[in-house]
Length: 266
Image 1 (cartoon, rainbow, N blue to C red):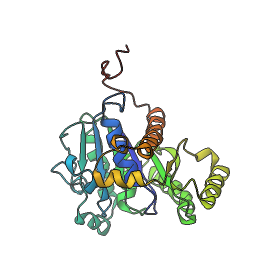
Image 2 (image 1 turned 135 degrees about the horizontal axis):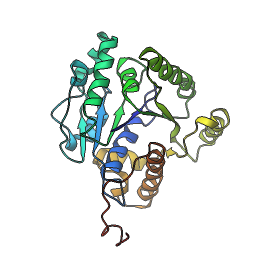
Image 3 (image 1 turned 120 degrees about the vertical axis):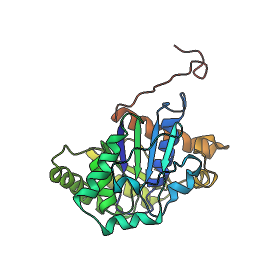
Image 4 (image 1 turned 60 degrees about the vertical axis):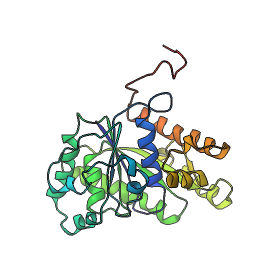
């Protein structure tokens, strides 16, 4: 199983939109997705992912992964471990053992899933550090706000600090993913150019623009590419391109190909 953590210490940068659509994309059969067995973990106490993905919730909440090494059986192609109000209690008992237990729980499910995506809270506290310890790769959605951009170096320091403390190889940093950007805004276009100039080597090859279609998709609890209308179609093409790039970087491959869906292609 490969594990991806979606991290930014600032809220409101589109983490949950990316995690939810990643779950849908990677678990769907080709040609839309990769047909993988996907596990989503909601570590954010706001529980927006839990609300959006309520039809895929496992009976085991995410907090159980911190208490003891826990293995959760898939409930289908897409399984979600929900956030609960008790998650904030993890921060009160922060220690090396709790973070390691979470990582051990992830490893215990290696044979049950092909991909795990973790939605982290808007802070570099214990839950986020646990996700960094457990993951193979990190992607960081970044909005146009200065505070979001300033957090990049904090994240990179945290990744290397966790790796050094636990004597492991740092997770691969897939890059900064511009998110919640308004293409019509001169300010946002300027910020996008700024990020490209100053963090060019860390720039992810994709963008998730500010679109009403993503808000509607979350409220309707379906992926944006299943919605009607040209704006939703454009959003679907945009975000699927992001996950195609993630799949390449993490070397994820389709497990099942339905030749009928692919028009009889071999």
